[in-house]
Length: 246
Image (cartoon, rainbow, N blue to C red; front, side, top):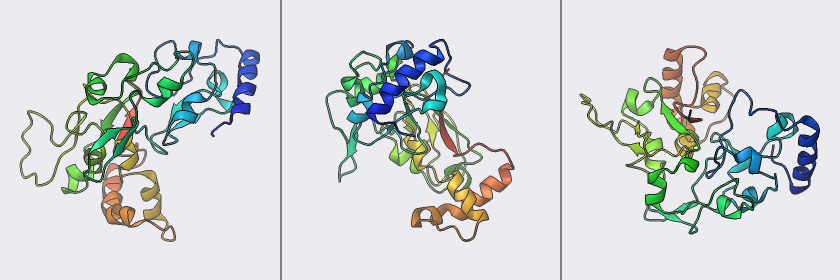
């Protein structure tokens, strides 16, 4: 639930009443880029990071989140972090600004300023590590059917964070790509998580004939049904997902 500025102020009061000592909870939040270890101590719940985000990637916890109320997070399934990049008609990713805009807007340093250039992003400074992508080859359509590759082609750090093939691994009979996450350069932006077609929406649609799918979703639906069926109940989706770095 996204909070407006007035709700932030209410959240600050509520935190005082609830007690600052509450932890981050059982499911650590994926914070915007620039959040260091002292993030909660520095964040004043002002909402400026969300106002600065050009893609509305930054959401805010509601009152049920305890000490995290009104603090920013990113849900890659809903909207990934685009790293303040835009894709040109030629397929290149260009920076929108000199620095990542959320960190530049933060008045307290809860989100550190990070220069928005590829070399800095690839160097993966500690505060940029939002999370890391984990790919399940048994669910991945590229690995199972020589199809898809959406995660690779949409990665803003393609060929560094997401590779077309795993290094030093011989893959017999491969025709298409075989995506591989390079943890050394993955910032956890969630773009791969966002575009992966092996997701809950398509999974539900295969069981509900009345649910309409887009052309993109319909293209992969049969393969998605097969890989999820083979995986059995309780499988975690999508096939490539962002988790919080340990």
